[in-house]
Length: 300
Image 1: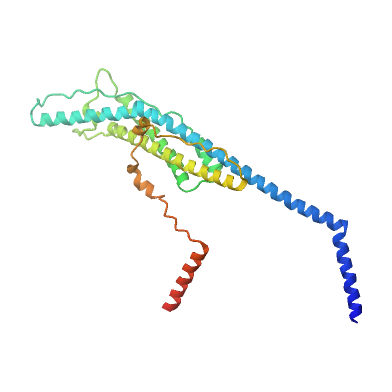
Image 2: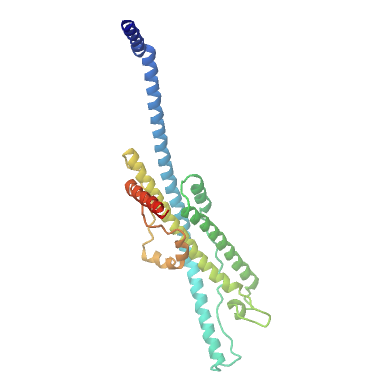
């Protein structure tokens, strides 16, 4: 009986061995390995292409942000800052004039002379639409970067509208024969009420320009960080250098003088302040978990 069993096993082994030595198995095994290898290579190549494309799209987004910052800086330097400084200086002179008239240092009938700044300005066309398309369709950014992008868009739209409101006010009140009254230009109370349209426009234009610069530069920093993270991943996975991530330089003293004080945006910054990295390795996490469970067991 044992002899017959041994013969059967020998025949089974011969059949199994023959199957593995057959052309069919060799071809099947080779095709399977080839398919798996081809699939792995294809997947790896797609991952490489996706990373390269996103790094390139990130660079395009950074360039788009620069295309927003540069016109804003130029407009603030040439128009917005002089407008605000001139208005504030005239307002200080007016306050001094009114104080002297109140103290009867000058006659009550004296008139305040000033020159109204009725030069009109327009916000240049900036690539905000292209920037948002890149961010929402081509980049894997989220959270702070997306919030900065949408907030920047809303701020630019509001700035454009306020500039238009100021221009409409100028068209309505600019008259070489009848200079605008100080009460209307500076928003002073009158017998029929107070019209703060012009001073409110000047203040809003200045603040919105600063807001746009802050959000644009902050977004640029976020995009550079995102691009560098992609480049690090690329180098780690494929052992080769990734395309250089563009970076804007705003360290020039003249540029710095035009930028808003970051302290004015501390409340906004707190919304996305990163928590300290408190990550633990698996052993420390296991010890912390065990300790927590033990304390719960003891407490009953």
